[in-house]
Length: 230
Image 1 (cartoon, rainbow, N blue to C red):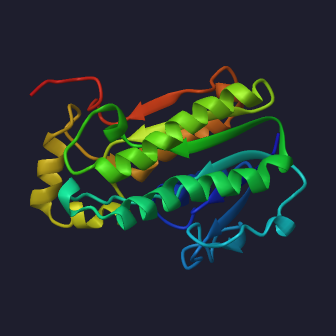
Image 2: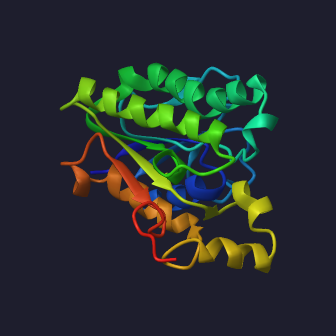
């Protein structure tokens, strides 16, 4: 079955990698701030800023079979340097923006549809300098589990919790070989993630191969959340 799948923030990084995979089999709709990478892809584009805009759903089909919310940030600072504005901004981008879009598209979600959200390994593994982003992503995990319970069996809702992934979002953490080597060594599998690593799991969660999965937080983190081999 050819599905209608909406990606929020699918023009770069993990979302872009996922879009390229999904296009082979499905109709893909991307809502993001930019479309500079999408010119050669057969996708429907909606200009959208998750921090401020209302999503224009008029160009979406009557039914959606998949939904992925990709926007996020990596805001790593000591707690004493975090203002309340920082916490509010991170919650707005990661959580409140997501909830707003979910409310807008929920009437279009078809029976058996799948929703995929993104958290971080730092929610389950306490890490210094992650207070703001871990709080925002932790809200996503709690929301997703409750939503999955409320809408079962009509909808499936799952969360992917990655560790560090080599995308434009993580550029300042991985902008030279020494940093990449240091970050790789922190993971039992001795490398940082690639966008495709995460996109592969998102594609699986959207597919009919995962129809008995809902309310799950799936760690895709090179073993960081469960293994200690150092």
